[in-house]
Image (tube, rainbow, N blue to C red; front, side, top):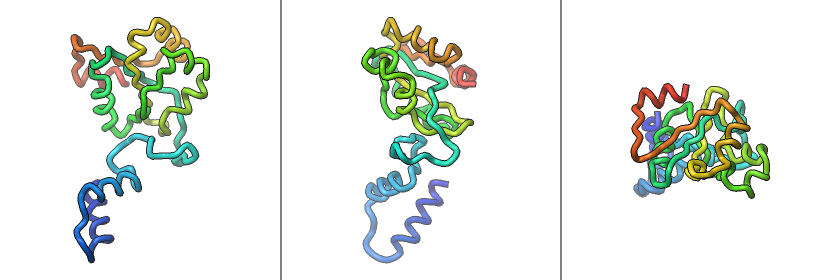
Length: 163
């Protein structure tokens, strides 16, 4: 599908004139279509795709720093039924963010459809004494994905965790 869209774009816009630099074309497509990413960071705060809403995450990735949390998030973000928060939120581990409330937290989540899983990643939750209770108070059935250099979870186990 992406190849078809890129081909159509090239055919329609560049049949005459100088060759286009690939980097410029890629950036144009990313900004206009959001073609190569699921992330809702392409939407401004005022634009909500029809049928979507901002929801609290159903899954949170925690783990030691430099333990692969970003890599796990990027791999999961490839799946069309997963949307990810654009940044580390530090809601449950930083008091100054936690006092802003759940509506503030939800406002930082990406827009998602009902069939999509919203995921947030903040490694600091792993070492925070207050984060576990705060996460549990928000949603006692939330899925936590833990990364640690000494742990290994296979693909099938990870998919079962997300179901």
